[in-house]
Length: 221
Image (cartoon, rainbow, N blue to C red):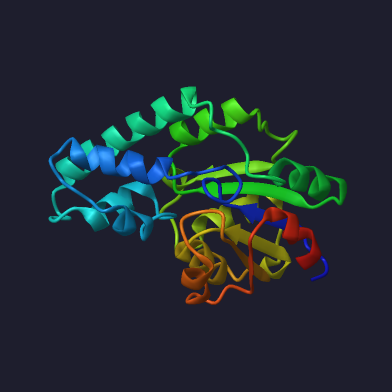
C-alpha cells in the first residue's frame, strides 16, 4: 500500500499487553453488584466504549444508575491496575514500529474504548508522550459515539489534517476495530491476534490482513 499518511492503533491488546486484566476488571466490577459475567462473554464486547459494553452486559440496559455504578467500579479497577501493575508494558515491537513510522513521516494515532482518565494512566506509565512518541490520542468519551462508529478516526483525521481516508490504516484486535476501520473508509484494516480475539474469530469479520505480531505490520505498508 502506497501513500500512507496515518496509522491508527488500538491500545489494550494491540499496542499494550493485555493478559486478561481488562476482562478481569469488568468481571470484578460486575461482581461488586452480584452479577457473574463469564470471561468469554466479556471478550465479545472488548473494543467498545466501556459504558456501551457494560450496557450490553447488564440484564436491564435501561438501568442507567446501575450502568454508571458498574462503570465507576470498572474505572477504579483499571486505574488501580495501570498505576501499579508491573506487568503493564508495550506489546513487542510497538515502540519500534512507532519510531519507524515517525522516521517515514507517517503520523501515529492511538484510539481506545477507554475513557481519558484510564488512557492517561497508561500513557504516563509507558512514557508515550505527545507529540514525541504519538501524534494524537483520542478516547471514546471524547466523541459522540465510540466504535464501531467512525467518529474517533474522523476526529483524528481532522486534527492531523489527513483528508483521504484511503491513506489511513487501522490496526486493532477486535471485531469493532475492523468495523470502525470499514465505517471510516480506511484504505487498510489490519487485525492482530495479540488481544481479545483469536485468528479464527477475527477471520469472521474479514479484515484485510491478520497478523500475529506488530513486527509483521511494516511489510503490509
